[in-house]
Image (tube, rainbow over all chains, first blue to last red; front, side, top):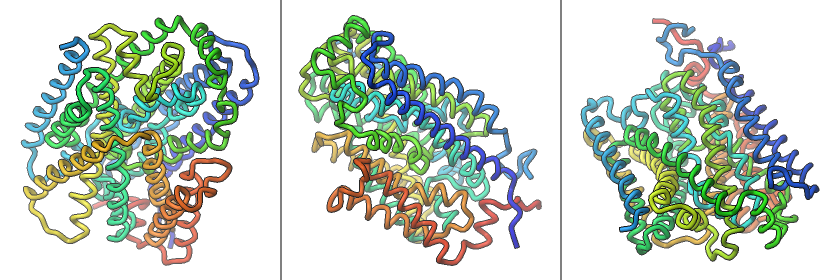
Length: 87
Length: 489
């Protein structure tokens, strides 16, 4: 017989999916921008364009985006079985 | 005494005071709750503290010494590689943090290997992992001490051995006396010192180099490949991707990172730690790495690349500020050592001892914890006396080995109900065998020039699944503990 699953495990699974999706998109963005801009000799902020974009612009955008994603994407749940709100 | 040394010594004295203060707190805790306090600080840490423990614990000499050193040696290509470690805290806490938090409270899990014990209920799995953690993390700790000693040598002109004693002795004091409580409080101070130090180092380097445009022109005149993302083909894109995965997907199983997942108070703290950790790691990484690269414009022929950060501190900043920067660099290293010391000690003094069936009283356990920690730190210090030259590659080897052996048993173990101890043992054995072969007889395992850890971790995960499916499922008790609805009394 299938064991009924604690709904908090579902929250943990969603957090896992969120993290791996977020990091995959971040890695694609950083490495993709670096590869795409690598051919150019132009400078941005005095740095090679690929450095400025992939190291100075893209990561802070993702760092800022992570604040609402983490705060809203992961619901608050009780961790102890005897805490209020636990199933 | 120079001003840099004076400010560094002041910082060291504060750390010793924290160790003594924490010792008094830990000593007041009843014996029955001693292990909980010593290893998880009573599971009551808030978001900032957890963020710092994970960020500063995971960002090691690889970030604070070898990071700028590699950027000095390989230009902006290594800045690109290092910046991908920004989301260490997210990858650890969101991947395993909630499950570890739930199980920790349900099954009284207080150490890294308690998770394996609860999930697999296998003496073999716990003992094999205890051996691997000690074998891989003690050399890693040694590299941290080497980094710290090299900084202090640069700063003070003292000999290597005296510098090693100064940099490592203080960690021994606050870890052994204060356990996780001492480590957490010290990490809070160290996080502030690291952040202030990195900002000052970058600002001083930027001013001395005449800004980005001037330093870029100077670096281009030395060799344009320092401005290429692949060093004009020296690093392949698969290599860059695989090294990025070491500090991304593969951190989920790391023992020293899991400390934060074991000690956070609630999900509010967990979420804060996720994004605060992102901010901290990004700021530290980008400022130190860009400063390391710009350092090439200031001193083109430094003999040991790893010495660029201390060289910059001593040459672009006035004395007292240089002392703060160097304290920040050493602090970054000390936090990692402290986290590792706690993990290795818990693996041996709590888990291995239990699995071997040794019955100890609370007082004996307390003594054993401190003795074990002293011995582990002593072993790392002894290894550091050999002054290994290729610190960064040892760090990658250790991280890769830990990632290879632990990713499948931890991540699949926490989420896949069918996984069992046969799968975990097979994954650890196969993954580590493959990993060692990749560095010895079969270098081709690192496909397309990748770091071997990534293909080995993926292969270990496949073995975990296949062997688990071919053997009986775990017990109903394990299923209830990890995924079942709690029984109401």
